[in-house]
Length: 461
Image 1 (tube, rainbow, N blue to C red):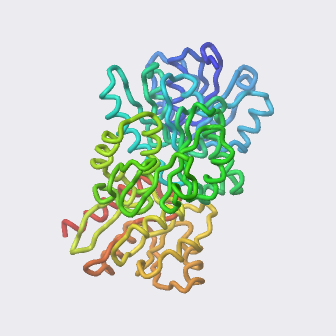
Image 2 (image 1 turned 120 degrees about the vertical axis):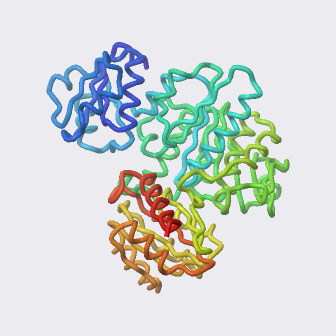
Image 3 (image 1 turned 90 degrees about the vertical axis):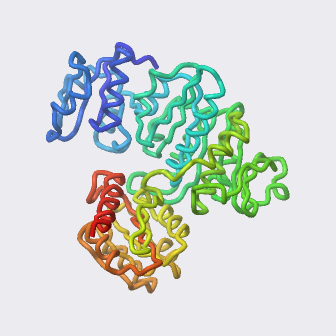
């Protein structure tokens, strides 16, 4: 779609909405920027654009003339598609696009897109580094790492050309509003319960994740987790060429004619070609072996040589806020896993711990069950420190399963203090909340940054 000259309503004044507005201005669209809150800072918002930018800013109440003049709308991922605003757009027969769809339709080059419940940021970062190294071997190629990773796709779209490689982390919220979105190589890392307060049912959530491959053909590739029942089943339905990755299946025996990446003892292979030994990697935890295998599958599918892939993996370190080493204080190791915003991610963090662990959990309620998370504690978790909106529900669930070593706290600083006071030499302290951050923090990044700040204050004592 050509947005030039159209009257476009952008809903949301956060990072995504600002990025969409900037892109639309570059394209030559007429932009009306809307926010449902009238408490936002008008001056601060307008500073995101050039002084002569013609942006009409509307807050709270939508004037009738806007409904009558708008050609289409671009919504931020934080706006649910069943919200009253989007229902009004549909009632007025105004086409609705997401900011990722806007960016895709405005960019050029090859797109590699990653989604999944967990591991998206690590895998996207790793694929991005591999592609950057690959681009250095080919003259005139640029790589853009964008999307839910924190760099709006819309900010990069007009800088791309036919030789560009775009590596994008795509969330389920962003996939809700795709239309022509068409990756050359895609990946669904896993699908476990998450965001059910938004998607309402697992069936809806799975269907949204599968939209990443909706426009892919037999000329494209999708990398899927064979060990995940949802993604394994999707491999039988998609039109794209499938590359599976697995920690468990014996492909040479069970599926001899399928391309696959697998872990055999301590080595990762692609179709029988050894890529790397896991002990040569900086990443810890079995979940990271899956992330690496997914990245290997995507890179191989794009034609990157195995030696280059392995070299980048050896140098790659964990992304911030995902089982991130913080400090060792009095022989107690502190890890920041603030990005563990659902129970499956938090389970993987516990599995990665090799020491008796004091666990900080709790936060914004995404309507997820906590039973499997509690069951994963085993003999590893010695103390559970709970805070936030879900603290009470988690405590009840833990006690139901016989875990009673629990301390309730009022905030994160107190949680760190409790862990510091109770930890013994040889222990680990892990912030892995299994919940979103929005009840007490602006983002999981803010939560993780504060955790690191509070931990490091004990270095000064």
